[in-house]
Amino acid sequence: MRTPAPLLAVALLCVTPLAQAAANCTVKLAGDDRMQFDRSSLTVSASCPKVIIQLVHTGKLPAQVMGHNVVVSATGDVQALAMAGIKAGPADHYAPKGDARVLAVTPVIGGGATTSATLAGGKLKPGGDYTFFCSFPGHSAIMKGRLIVTR
Ligand code: ZN
Image (cartoon, rainbow, N blue to C red):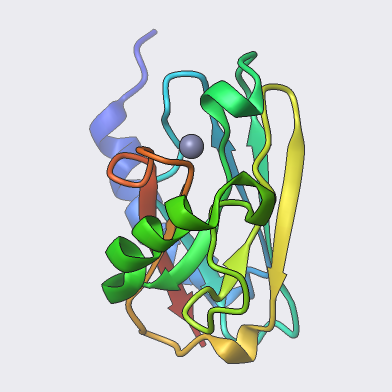
């Protein structure tokens, strides 16, 4: 029997507002050897004392070749931070150290590894324009998505 896809989609849309009412304090993201994140958006709540972003690298390539991390910033800062991150280099996880525009950053990991970043929910403005991206050189153009912040 075939899955009635259109009906399922409608059902999911109807459920979404309810799902968003719950506080999302821990979100999960995966990166792979094809230089892709598995999510194009993540939803977190500004009411969380701690927002935890977990990253798992589901590939096999080492961090020097296909390293991934997660940087969270205002969407308008992504381009500048990606450039500054390349200058910062691998020792600083490709993120400028002590830069207030970096709201969260995880270490760079290779295939099979897991990492996470924590930030205070209060640092995020509900409805604000935020982006999560991988700052490994050359990755941010593709490996990025929207961080949606609810109350
Ligand atoms: Zn990457």
